[in-house]
Image (cartoon, rainbow, N blue to C red; front, side, top):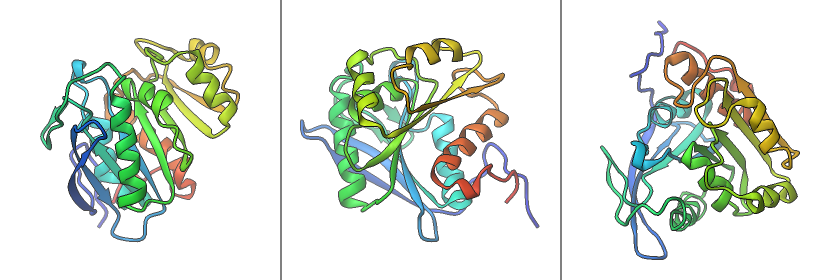
Length: 236
């Protein structure tokens, strides 16, 4: 008999902890959650701002690891950027406001493609993680970007120009009541990136608190990668 999926529901997957070393000698800790059946795609999660409590276990990404492998056939790769701590452990190094974190992104992309042998990878950034994605996730093997609550805090015009010329698909989920960048302003700030799909999410806030918001975010991620599985079911 099917049961309602709740905030703490953990669905079947193979979950493996890992460590990855960056080119400047920082050790990153993380976890990969893989479906029990052949995967249809994967996401690399770039978490919110560590100095404001962001980490690989920030709730949307943790719930993605709990649900997406079983419900959508999606591999979920999470990690702590340098100097960030979660229950998984602490990545070495020091927070650099998105600068040296580019080496973290580079190392994790290499891990996804060269070690995990992922063929279809999307990079999903949330808040601070969206700036990391726009600035540093430029590997030609990436399928595209998915941005959650982008603040455009450290990304600059040249970053947007890169993606405008690159042409890969970018999907941006912008909460109606975001603290930093709301839908109308997002449309103006991202106007140069013609291929970006901006989804204004009514009633939502920057941190996507509450199961309706989480379900919407995870369903939109699924709609990009495995659209036949979207929206996600509420029972399993």
